[in-house]
Length: 107
Image (cartoon, rainbow, N blue to C red; front, side, top):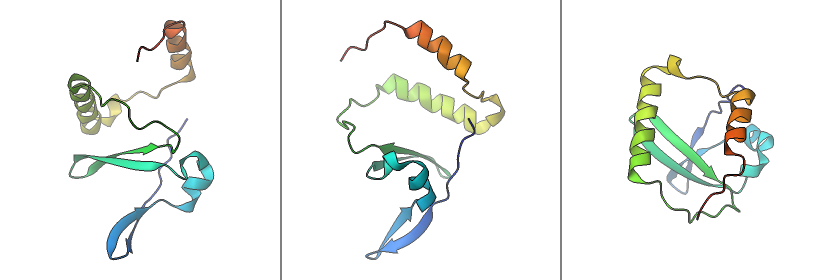
């Protein structure tokens, strides 16, 4: 599946700057209409945007520090050399599903 890229528009609302997603985004992805948005600044020119669906419990534990450091290192590598990225395929998903069959998550 090819990734979709949407352009945001900078606007002023009540004298405050804001970013707006295009209407086409919500038409193609209606599950995000009432989602809250979290933005993490990864670098001066890179943001990580997370949409949290309205019905999702946002009280989840934050990622442990080691996981965050690991993911930050992976992201830095990917930004430095995007050619190392490999598309996630249906075959990969099927293999992972088979490996995880019967595994339950502890809370």
